[in-house]
Amino acid sequence: MRRLGSPFVREDGRRLLLSAHSFVVQTPQTTIVVDTCVGDHTPRPMQGDTRFIHRLDATIEGGLAAVDVVVCTHLHFDHVGWNTQRIDGRWVPTFPNARYLVSTEELAATVADDHMDVIGSSVQPLIDAEVLDAVASDAEIDSSVRLRPSPGHSPGHVCVAIETEAGTALITGDATHSPMQFAFTDVSAEFADSDSDQATMTRDGLVADLLDSDTLILGTHFPTPTAGLLRRDESGLVRFEGVT
Ligand SMILES: [Zn+2]
Image 1 (cartoon, rainbow, N blue to C red):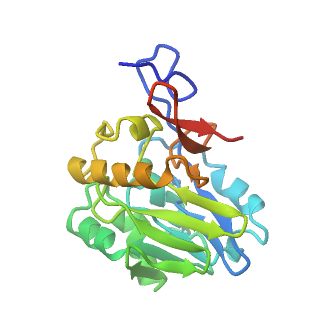
Image 2 (tube, rainbow, N blue to C red; image 1 turned 135 degrees about the vertical axis):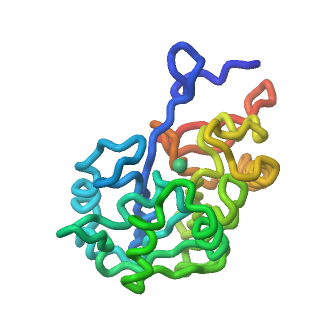
């Protein structure tokens, strides 16, 4: 197998490097947070960055209260953690003025099988507060931002497509965990796509649309460089070329 090399694999070449990101999208009309990482107050894997929410608050003009929409690409623990925070013994929405969006399919599938134990802490409190909207997986958020159906990693997974006069971008969610999966679309994450064949079709569709385009790819689990473009190298391999 050809070596893909750093920065996306460890020096021994045997393990992938992953990170977890939230993205803030600010259009003239809307401030959107896409995914909320692992969160706090729960015994979840990968926990540890308790300062995250303070940095996010400082990053957004107007702070957490200025967020209009929170998109959950899917309902896995590393994407919904800061949907809520625990205050005085109760889970409450972290973004006090936001509508939270999840695809109808994803919500139904997670309610039916909450294998990551996210409903109680990260979803039900939003339903109780009447701020969770189950939407079509191609829903339009505003004139610049819409969801893109991308099932396979989970039943109702969505990517987030951004289209402005300045350019286009796509937030991957977990349609891909590593840029390697653009080159080898049938490689599934160790922690399993819920439907590997469907996930492969989703990645094939992404490569078909994004290869040699100017769409900036924002990888939810890609370490730096997290943003890049898809190009084919001289050997024919699809490569993610980082943009910093
Ligand atoms: Zn993930």
